[in-house]
Length: 320
Image (cartoon, rainbow, N blue to C red; front, side, top):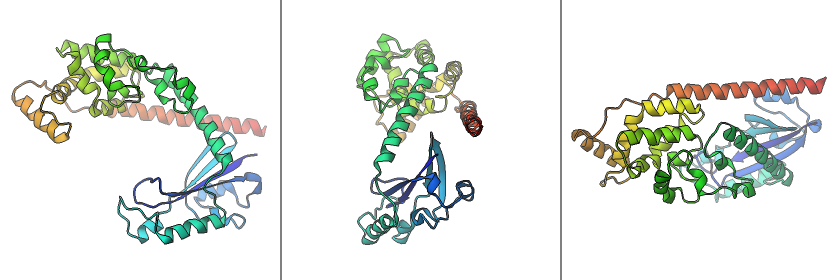
């Protein structure tokens, strides 16, 4: 026996999501439905005389957890288009929008169901534990930063846990930026490993940078995006990637630490030209993210494939 959780949204803006969107949910026992679920998912739409509120909506995504099947319908933007709302517009207070919300509720949708909230909390907690266990087993420095729900466990970690492979001297410079955690930059990236930390500090030290100069890149957006592409790769791959691109990292340390830098891209470009003219920058090549990105995509594909195989095996076991 399984239960189906349906989710449907009427948008108030052209942006991807808004807190003013009208979100609807429902939960239905699979034994009560009057349609073929597998065929409906395959066709991308449900036809049901018994449950008119879930009929004719385009299915955007299907997910499952335990005995629950999540069916997400495509976000409805027909009123947004009707009112010609721009990206930052909002029709939440329009009488027609309010009327549409009331209509959907009259059809059978609900805006809150306690059972669904409880199921989601259980799911998030389980997925959080799986995620943190995986990150910890991989040796990610900030594996505990994936903890959001288990607040008691989260309290066990302090600022010192953000040090990772950085020396005491470098971390002393980073402390004020790290604060209480959940910070940005490379230093706040969940993909960090002890080895990647050590490689960055050691390689920049060889090039003559001070810990303060290193911190300019380690706390930057560029540092974070650099890590985005290799976060799922092995520590060994990360180290080689860092060494290959160390000249670029060195240059960004000098640029971001320049006294005239104003925190803008224009400022970065301007100072880069100035330092290049003075011969202070090292030769660098365009970062080749492909190898790291391909490795990450292969890992994701293999994970999805494994989950599908497990699901099929588990399903056959239950049938038998």
